[in-house]
Image (cartoon, rainbow over all chains, first blue to last red; front, top):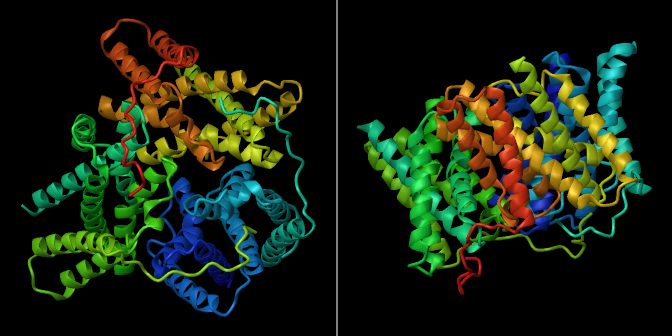
Length: 210
Length: 210
Length: 210
């Protein structure tokens, strides 16, 4: 049952990021194959980097389900596109859920590999953020992670809370999973709604590139 | 003999992409070492990602021949440069052949690893396209794959035809290889000549980045 | 003792690149978590690609010391930032030392894996340069390696001299290490000070992207 719940999380995250990638690619006017490729990279990018770092088999190479889900999601997004004009909110919601779902999967894989909690947080952040970073680099956008309100910060906080609750709290594992995923979505949503930003460093006058 | 033919394909693809990378780097006015580095990355990029995903030894790490071929091709391209001014056509021809040759190598490696045909098509597309994508990102160009006429689409069609012919047709394996490589080159060339494009999605008015 | 000296080199290189990444991220006005992420990627990027290529465990996954050092260095850089306005020189010095230190580590790992000297030079160059390349791509700067005076060239020369001295000279190993690291720093520093550049290829008139 546990196994099944984890798989359901992975499927939801995959759908969320495939939609996020598809919409971003359609915004940039890519052709249908380009949309599918960007959807694929956005979905599997973070998990692929994580699996390469862990030196475990890359999750989508021997499991046709993920590729099929991404393919179907892309096609549905392209059809849905002609009905729905407002991408901003849709893209945002799916991106937030994908972020939360994938971050927790990443932390869990780190725990399974018996890595130090700090490394688990890094793996969670990589799993959550890298797909979106690669998507933005390929589409020639400034990576979302570096121009927006709190983004990676949500992953880091969510990962840390997950590890603390798993270790010290008496909640069921499934509750902790759902709670921290929603926590990440909540932090990200509230951050965007109320324009929360971390304090930034001011430009120095001698800012010209060396 | 089969083995030798495969090696010949790999050498030709390596030369084609090393030339494509060298010319693109010279266009951007990189110095000779920069040209060699870009030639190297363009040539081995796709195959490196493929081998990392398959978790097999990276093909150029234990085989000095590929690195030597790239080095010689770069130097020859730099000398040839002073004689030949028109890069457009040259770059295009080499890019197309590299695309066809590497795509089929990628599909074959997927078959050898006994992966599902859909995953083989993905591996073929990665092997064919990723070197060029990384080259364009490093040279700060919008990746060719996303701004031009049919490109990745040619890889996907070529890979699919290859798999169908290998499974259901009675042609010799070598014939199927040569045929699908030329098919990819033909699709790409005709697409550029006649400005074939896949239908694209229109910009929505609310296109500003979220 | 040898082991300890190698570890000290790795620590110094990590600190140097973490500082270089932190300062570059602060220049781009990232928030503190963004600064830490860029510092991390700049520090471990080159070595991570090297370890993936060599198919050995990624060096920072099972060693908490590197992550801690990067975290502390980032925080110190952010505090130091409010005192020190001139990033140019600081960034440059740390970048040069990181380049020298990491290049030699990369060559050594190649030798340990009993690879051909040419492949060792490539690994050294990757270890030295890739962290900075990824940093610049993420920060949307033209990769330093491709717009500046001699950069990768310094890695290639340093790696080659290291291999020659290890093989043919009678100096102690530690002396050869220190000498070639300082050689790379010297080449890079003199190149910037005196605007050394490799000869470049001129733009052709038909330079428009194909």
